[in-house]
Length: 368
Image (tube, rainbow, N blue to C red):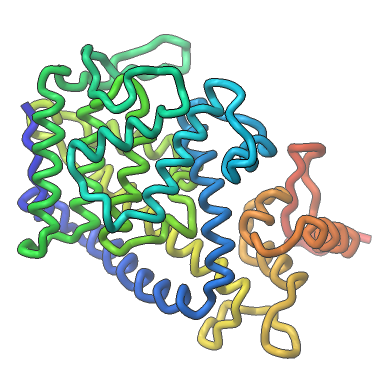
């Protein structure tokens, strides 16, 4: 049986690459705390956008979705769920809000995990919410030819309560202040073991992402409130599953390697902090930022300039929705007007049509 232990296990994770990632994250955490206090209105907007993106992305990873309009109504709680997908989306919304607002009062215990799982399914008629699974299962992988193969066999349902208790105790021991273990490493190792234990009949993936946020917030790494970690995971879903698979090998025999999954998750967290910096730089003038190329006469970039700067900084084609996501305080009418102007002036190139429309900066001079 796997033994959950995070103090000694963390020692084997201290590679040069891991140390570089941890250092960069801790530095970014310090920068973020200063900016949050300085610009409360802006970060409030980021919180609202991240809440929608997190609920949407985490459910979409599991094949659960609804229309953009219905999603926003559900998040704002101005409507009630119409079907099973929307019931599960509403449950995620509730648990995410609970964690955002009360994380300091939500300790990591088996009973708390069961309560969060119960709330995840509270809008559905399902009866297994808040209960560990009562039957054994396997995790399968769909191959490109349509066949399936067993990727991992979770432990027996009979020992689930014991394993979850052990994992919670190991996390508390690694983060109680008497150990040198970085809380980021303890968090990621716990989340990985939780995924391997696979303690529920349904909702394991969503619970693992909600618990990730809970433990990060309790350790002071609250970037997930402002930048959706779930969205970054969804965008790198193949790498997410590859890292899970690589670290899973030998888990039941207690010989697995946490490094692939730890490296992936640290990368996700660092990406979120850098996205936060990027969005702040596009909204707030930073005198020390040599990359802030466009400023208006009073030193602050205008909304038009911030949209143009967004395209200056990326080679990736972006949709109108991508722009609105990156610059949540700018209205859709302003974005549409600026995109049209940039197209007319030959600054942007339009790719595709309809809902597939994307825009990319014209890097080569346009031939007359």
